[in-house]
Length: 342
Image 1 (cartoon, rainbow, N blue to C red):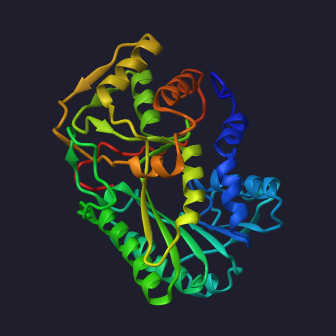
Image 2: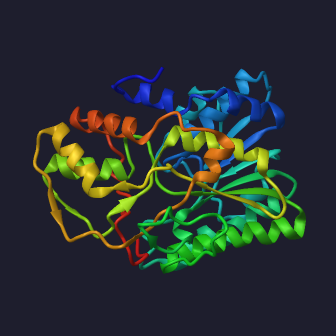
């Protein structure tokens, strides 16, 4: 049973990392150690912990290793949950070569914000680094995170971009993300490396996400720009579960899947709902465009089943978290950007 409210970060992290029976079954099918690259980012901690909890539940005696520069200093958090840590600059080829062998690799490394003005670093992180990883883990199963930004804007009258649509990235960040996918595809075809590419379109964990951005603006009385009038989002715990279960589909050439919520949410409607919950006025600027960055996630739901947390429950949780002063990561998604500049 899901709680009506989430009142602490410990409770939040427990829920985000709680594996489903299907996740446990997936990891039981694929023995061998797990390495999570880029583990100290927004999704890495909860995904690594879910993999550890599911492995324990499956009775699998395996190492789960979190790899990152760990600039935020959260090494102890991982170790407290039975996850090994390795500090590594993933752009250093020699350090990557020294990483431990692993049958299963989750690739979460990447760069988005700050791309404008430092495009070369963004390309290095998003396109050069995957080549290093593919060489190091040629014989592993790799689940690589990508983004819905590789798609173009689509009409809001549609269901959004599907996996069979041709990518049309806007801006250098999105272009470099398509480059990341192409590197995994190239090495998968050349080496036979089995890979799954997860095109994630806005996870939400109450401390960050599009819903958190909007709720904080309504709470603070700030105006809401309606130009990007619609979006998709998914509870991060569900995104974690789908990503782990993607191991079942890793293939050569890579298997591609959209991961996000089924609902196309209206910025106006969501903010009006927050305003009623907070008993505060909302302020809008601009008007909704006829297109938005939207992904059609029906295929992932057909394969993996329904999400544990639907959009209505997620909105309720976010509203409660923000109104009680819950901590945020202060990392806006900038989902409203239409020019591809981050």
